[in-house]
Image (cartoon, rainbow, N blue to C red; front, side, top):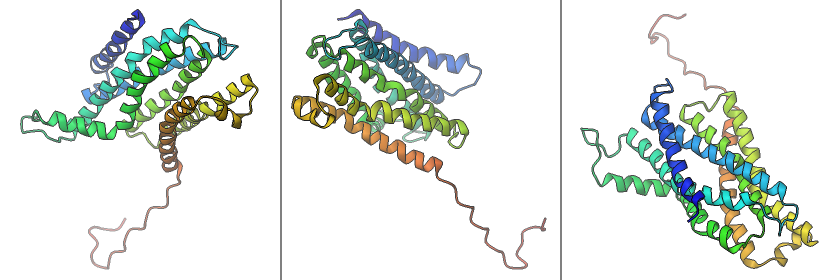
Length: 282
């Protein structure tokens, strides 16, 4: 087992625990535990995203030959970051758990829910976050073995580009924090939403056509002929990775439409019949 994998197993949970404690005890913001859990989980996700996108940029710009060139950071960061996806499944569950408890579902008079309530919360969590949990599981069980073993040291350029997909994550995290504090209609939220939309489109949706185009430039093929000249399992894998990105991009676009849609004028107050006014006129 790689030492970097072990370091990652400690780094992400410990960072989360330290941030939770610091936000509650040292920040001076008097955060409740549920707020500290949410903010800490988003901060850890943002830190991981910044590290991943930085590593991806270094790798992709260092590999001039997109097939044979290698960079030590590609395999090193992959091994370090894999525990993050396992940790994040648990962190997302904690956020869901605290939201559930705040709403008071399943609590008795003493404030503690029955033992079976944990399973109800877990089922609700899996129902709500099924796609994200599945995405994380695929990253650990499929993408990690493929990137470490199956590639056999080839294609570091493509791996670096895939790591740069995390560029959009800090904007997504900030958006969720702003929503938590009901700041949806502030200028910061609108600017962040615009950056999230553009970064998600460029780094997650258009990433796959770019990778096909890059391979076509290397192999002397047009973009449209690339899918016909590469193994079918590569096309299938790309399609499976792209599908959830398109779904999440649709959700982001729908949220952006609600955010930037002009508000209509408030409906006029109903006229009261004479003699029924509750108080004097202004």
